[in-house]
Length: 66
Image: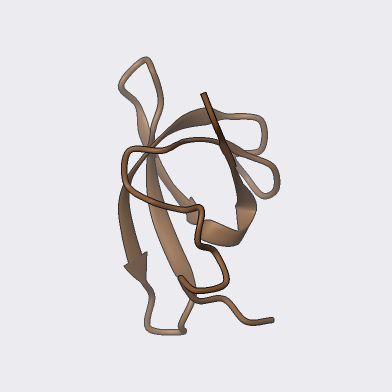
């Protein structure tokens, strides 16, 4: 699986997203930080509306256009 920013063009800082897979499935928030891990995966920090933050993989989120 190609897991780079070119394959995930919708993921940008400030975009609203919903986590569709993984531990945080069903949670929503704003993308606030995008990084590439040592293994090459795109990791993002999602900030929920209540202020709580969590990290997840970019491939686990779907950007929601408001």
